[in-house]
Image 1: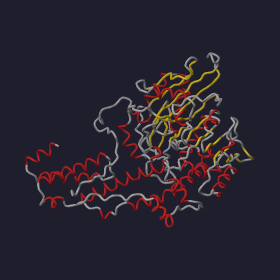
Image 2 (image 1 turned 45 degrees about the vertical axis):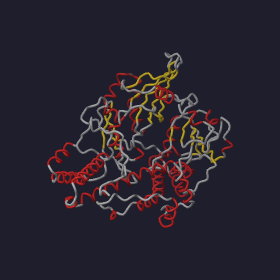
Image 3 (image 1 turned 30 degrees about the vertical axis):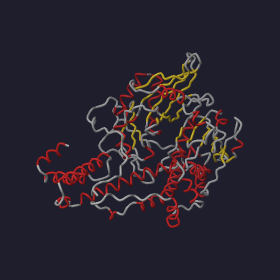
Image 4 (image 1 turned 90 degrees about the vertical axis):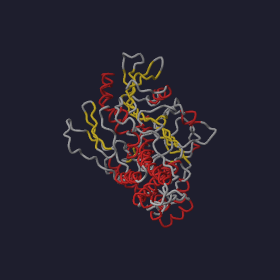
Length: 575
């Protein structure tokens, strides 16, 4: 057996930017943040229509343009007057090429899984204005400015729109061109670094969280060398929502909502406006962080959506998706879905926000259906009553919303981490022992995941929370969800990389020259080729190995080559 042969293949990037790293690409900095900026208007003959896309050479398919048009306007039932902000998410067309794959490796490698760039979806961030205007035939000015990106940075892009949209509605395209040119000067989105993003006389200062982050989040670090004028507007987060505001009418049902998200259950959110719809869906998706929600989710979904038929068919079970809708028509369409959250305008009961009730699905029939959570779902775990009391007491004491949100976010984070911790411990036990890592053998295999074996570990290493309930039942249900499948695939890939790293370290620590002494030229050449392949794989897949280790391996390869006859040396140097 060849001592350095490894049959394990690592998943890696489909494309690299190595060949064109030095060639400046037009709009490359812009495209690191945004796909494009669109202006959607209402045309009397065509209905919603794209008036402008910037940069002009961005190629959206007709299907994507149509989707953006319909998703950029509130439907007529919302009655949104004035300025409205909301977001949507749409599936990109199959087979389209993208300009950002060259940068994807570095960003996605360093970013938390919940903030990574999307391969197959766009995020749209909308600033919609509807005001009375006698000069327009319909009597209203209706227009949306839309930022399209693969980054899930809702807080950043909505803040950007608050700066540029009012100005654009006054000055139109020249203003938009200036803005896009300014964004094309922004630094790259590097996780962990403080970034200053100037636009229209304002400097937004942000920090994208790095992959490894403490529970409480990391504060934005102030730059040491820059003396910025004007003083920067510090955004506390690029992505975090006001969770308390989003969930204040369903606080007593947080345990149920957390479980529905964890298990990837089909959920419809029916809301009075696209703002409430999109914020609620995004808040639900974030409720299981740092675990990534892996089903599809649409913060704002309309009957014109290209997936409407796919998601409303009654010939099969509802898919693993969360849909945010505002059109009452959907009450009839989705009445067979298992979980429907019907939200209305927030009502107060004394000092406290009125809590919606859990209701039977059979009552979800009429278009004027009352607010409530329509489901037959029974939680596996009991409610944390002390946590709910703490939040409700905070409302009575007029505790600021951002503090309430921080309490809620920490509670959800700790609950998710407690749930994942036993799984992480079990995965560690599947790793081959480091002492079994020999440079003279193929890397040992990672043991297979056994659900039954994992369940036996819960008695000694179960979740560290005080919450009582059927944890075993929750895990068994989780194993059937897309969230588990995605989490396990990611962790298995990371474990495979770790095994590769340990094997590489064992090779570098070995005395390769002594091993070569009694070997034939054919065996030595084969060894050199295998070592080179190992080195190339380590760099291509960017394994977490120290560069000096790779340099040492490269030096060993050169030393072995120099021990060979000149004709072989020449041949190997050419390769």
